[in-house]
Figure: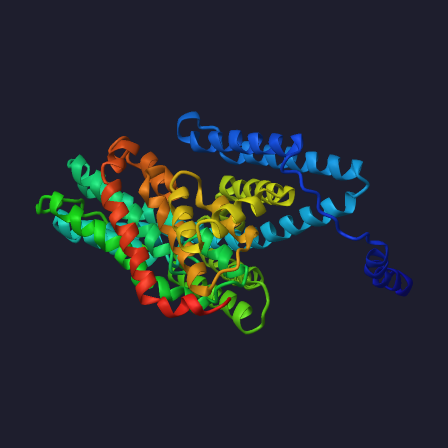
Length: 457
């Protein structure tokens, strides 16, 4: 046993001793680079038309990720540089693994709260309030704005969408406008918190923006939501909405799980801010809170002759297609960056037109292409920007997806939930109004956080 431990202790030293110098080849004008670009574009076309084909978005991007790195590996091996490609790929996988573990814990908690009827109880409470359509429009908007920083914007949009459908099924015009408002509010709310959107989480985990610094985007994010909502308000009739008088009871341990989720977030923040450890480690520690609580909930329910609460079923119910999609995107974009394309893009955008215009353009691009690869590409380029500029690109990629219904997970999910009442076309009619909010939020950030544009990261 002692000999084995001594051998293991020597392994890292021997690995370092035999490692070759890392070399990067410029493949931007090589046929392998062109092939990788075409494959990535084709994969993303499949992602964008998932709503019509029902071909899961994770499948094409994972396939293309494997092919891209297979091509890179072949080129580097033929040049006698296999170790360089290996190190680069391992770095991409490490970045993904931290994001994966963080999101897996968050999704598990969301699934646990959904199963314990937390969200159903909230929906019924809202439905039974007897509000007017205008009041419901604003209430669901504000709730979406303030819930999405804690839960993800997708879950928030689905909860508020269920409320709108429950009371407005007989008023298609209201449902359509309210869904647009929910998408804008959920995306705006997610932009000022590390937990509100995948893009903000990526920026925080990268260590570029500290946890407390994100809240500088609260004002601009609120303006992004308020401006279009104030205009849409006048297109809603001020009639009383009717809903059922049903009642939903929160299951045993539901409130405890909510408290544990908040504690888990605090643990992740503490690990990152005070211990200088990856937030994912704090989230995994928080998962143990849920697993321990699940043991006692399951034990109590079995005494009541009920089916016991099983935390591993909640892990199984996480959005695995989304998690695997992130793997394909991060590894694919990482491969394109390793070939040299991100350096070219960075020079074309951030040097040629300047950081401010580049970051605004990035936000518009995120309405067409998913904001995850867009933000990962920016992080991989790592342009030399001030804190104010990093917050600007965080804001624009977060709220830019609201310009089109397909620009965010919240919009895509609500199109499926609405059964034809909220469509790409119905959202497009309000794109001009949403763009006013987009521009106003950028202006507010430039004005309110002007001092941060001189602060280096």
